Amino acid sequence: MNMLNSQLEGFAVGATKAMLTVVSIPAVVHSQSEMPANIPFDFYIGSQRFPSGTYSFKSSGMYVKVSSREGHSAIALAGMIPNPESRTLIGGKLMFTRYDDYFFLSEVRRAGYPTGLGLTRSRLETEIAKSSGDRQLSASGTTR
Image (cartoon, rainbow, N blue to C red; front, side):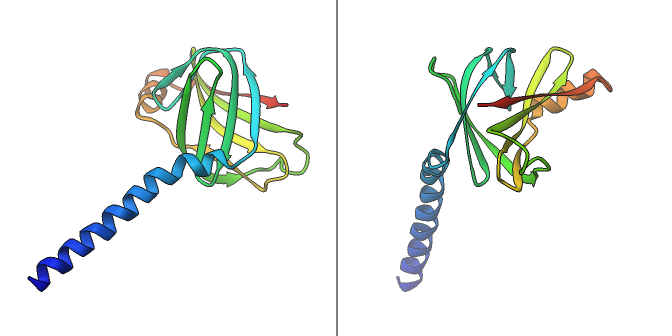
């Protein structure tokens, strides 16, 4: 019986940690300043397509949250990358990778931060990149 209690206790602790991790992600993303931007083309975050329009970008830790007034939203996993423009950038900068007519959000840079966030490449982006050959271009825009 003591061994069973120990196993149940271990399971409960693990489940609680997992639940706290999942629940805390939106709260962490919400805690950072907002970067509004008008995106003049349709774009993708992961495999989710977003129409052109005005969006709010929030970044925190290893996440980027994107949302619009029309209800389009996503939270994307990202990793820290160097931000070579940290001292000269005003506002922020969004970097998109283009394959033919597909634009994927690839980086979020904020003024004054030595690191930016590079979004994890999705399966869809990898497939499109393979079929596009070497026609990869970068497009960027500065946020207000």
